[in-house]
Image: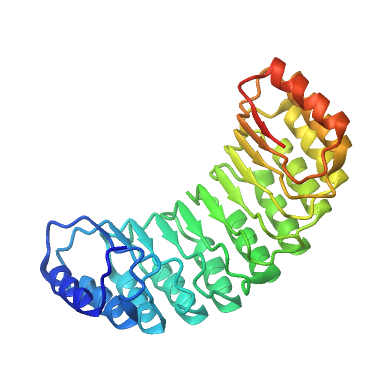
Length: 321
């Protein structure tokens, strides 16, 4: 941060109202900027029909509902922005999140590719609106809704269903960490992974109610999808156990897309799963896996021995215990 406050916000708003050269504006880590300044910045940008601004970061700048409403109004017509990051503003709220999604859905000429809304107070209303957006969006490539615990299981399921229904989706990254996903969302994410060919990074971590069966279903779905491009899958602290462990071992025996697999902080995973995972990776001479995280997943002596053997035969794989 640079200690910016309301006065700087007003000055920057005046600049944005007329600038035709600025392409990137990062105002992150200025919590004193505030809601009024955030609203003024969005209004100024909306008023400038010749703006070339492509990236706007308002991370942790004290935004609230007023700024949220103005950002939504901006997204309804803007054609220059490619990256918008108003994350870490917990007072933004559910209604503002919903308005942002609805604005994007109504803008046929949007070029927004990355939208980061982690820790912004989103809930079920925003969840439903983002599901509607994902059902039709052909521009979004990265969506981060993480650390919004009021989002919930039903919203997670709806988001996965919507993405599965959109054959023209270009979404490459979906972050749903810390959103209180459960078995319903887990089943829908597995159905999505079974057919999706755009996702490269899926992050439903920090959802301990997701569960062992959902983890197993995700692994089985990924194994069944010959067209998958998924290279990063983060499932730390998702309630995985022996079922998921066995299914991920079966997956790793043949998979050629995964590069990073997080399974750490799943205390029920256990020793047998560690042995099976290591054995699978030893057998798969075409694996692309480079990172496997198993810390705090109850790896015993047999698993540790198997992983040491894996490190000797596959030194390129970084296994964290």
